[in-house]
Image (cartoon, rainbow, N blue to C red; front, side, top):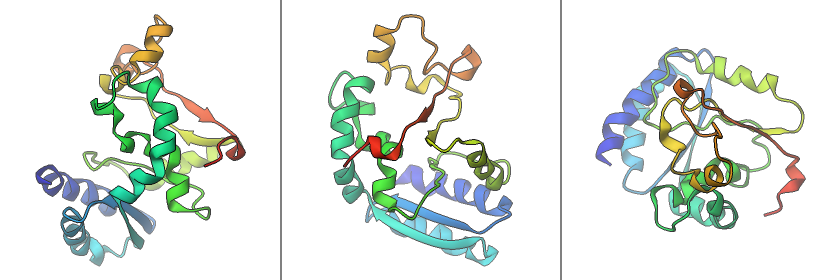
Length: 183
């Protein structure tokens, strides 16, 4: 929680001070961290940048993701209990089950980020998606996912998937039909 206490105010302030449109914020947290988040957001509400704020309990979210984690984890982490085996790393793949069928677009951001521009610019990227796209991933700027993609990289020598942008790394735009995954 110490990291949240220092990182979330920077994240929230950077998003809401530059936002040109109201924001619907969904926060996934636990019972101990929620008061920290609520306190920070209460201090920012005077900016009138909120459309709504929703909270989701991290334990319930992880329960929803169990099946996805079982299917996907062999491709991203070869050992159970490793850093990247945590169910929350698969959040983007199952978020539509958590937020519900009325939520058609969502930007997922970690609280250790700082926005330097209007988040509406990022939102406009959705208009570049084709009708089958459900997930867009930005270039990674650090070698964070190299260990997570160990299995894939072992069977695909020389791949640049997961390498940082500074190393000519690649990112992935995944396109699927919604019907391709049944919970």
